[in-house]
Length: 309
Image (cartoon, rainbow, N blue to C red; front, side, top):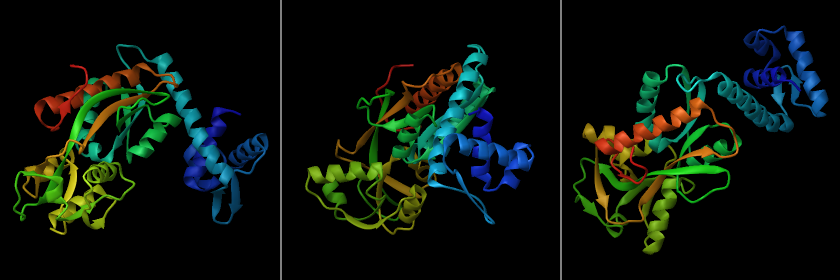
């Protein structure tokens, strides 16, 4: 099995046809088809179902795609480690950011990286924290910001900050600046679904006080939760860091919640089982510096618990 065969296979998966893949990969269509057939013969399985609709992955093809991407990512890391120097790190580095963090950190991280490391190409992936954690383990990500500092096999977690959740309402609603969870339980709420990490923190805090919330809607999109709150359809509970723009322009109001359970520990995680590179180490340090500066300046309203930078 050759790396080029894996690239060809991924190209066919992404385009859905030999014709489009051959154009993207700059290889003749018959030669591409032969390489895919040779790969299937070596693996002993069919990777695609051929039809007039194109090339459709089989179950084996879908499984192999995940592994092929990891193998190519590891090969790219190996090249970067050999080529890069400590003075001029280069190559691609992938970072996973939960949506509630990505809203405020993506641009500062990109700007700092472009300025300090112009030869590094960042790939920023925004998703639920559970997916990000899984992709870090599998090798699809090099660095991830996650929640919770509990030790986990295969990961190195560096605690960064404690991020408190706040009560959020439309500016037409007149409320005190400090509320108890019992006060909030009497108000209509729009919250993420129960599988969302934020929702689990909220539900656990309510369970400790034997409180039930008046949830009028569950919305998975963080942007839609904020828009529903702005429209006065209900209030919500979110990290203050993902509300900075709305608070600044006066479209949302936030209040402190008197409950220590409504907080999350943010950590920077990397894999202990996969080789790193100078570029990954440089970007990890840069991410820590950017977030430390945000907390220190008040841009990210949180309590820094990591090392002083």
